[in-house]
Amino acid sequence: MRARTHLALAAAAATLAVGALPASAASPVPPVAAAVLTAGGAAGPAVAVGDVLAAPLVSGSKATFYSTAAGGTGVTCAVSQYTSKVTSNPAAPGVATAALTGQTFSSCTANVTGVTSVKSLTVGNLPYTVSVSDAAGLPVTMAGGSAGPIQATAVLNSWFGTLTCTYQLSGAFTGSADNTAHSLSFRNEYFVKSGGSGLCPGEGYFSASYGPVADSSQAGSPVVTVN
Image 1 (tube, rainbow, N blue to C red):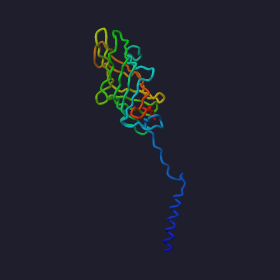
Image 2 (image 1 turned 90 degrees about the horizontal axis):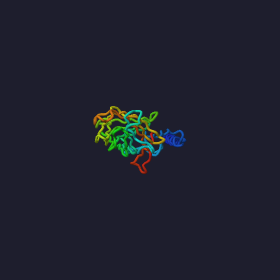
Image 3 (image 1 turned 135 degrees about the vertical axis):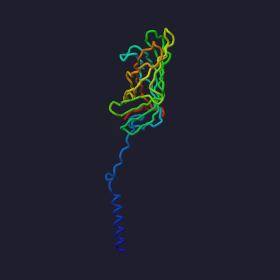
Image 4 (image 1 turned 90 degrees about the vertical axis):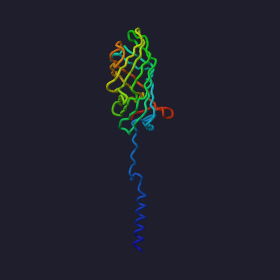
């Protein structure tokens, strides 16, 4: 009986000893890694899959579709809107993805000889696949999806009637994100004419900066940060 009593006391003492260990001796709880995309800042909540990200042109900038890389001649649009839906947002470091569901242009003008006005500038074969990496430089890639390559069509009013000029990109846009302006930028993305009037330029170079990119699915549409 005495032996059983001693064993019970020893067990109780061991239990008390474990319970008395300081908090610093307990196993640390690892911090939860931030997602690649967060809303409202680096410490904000993760952008959820299915959230809609939207952005106008960066204030004071324009979207351009020039006939040469040096610019100067082509179509300039004062208004453009970028809209995408998030399809993945893993913990950082990593790559988040989205489906570009809309890219619209308006208030466009042209300084091409013979062109009197721009009737429309549209993109086709949506959705496109957008990838945003948190690697150095915050690279952004936009590629065509199952509907086909990235495509742009300009309808122009000219001295010779209405001209329809269609261009396609064989590869992908390669741009970058910026956490100061919360923007996405693309520069001189190269298109080749794929159809339309023989009076259309044979190639085009697209540039635009969109921002601030905001998560319009969350209250207050907070800006998006790449971690």
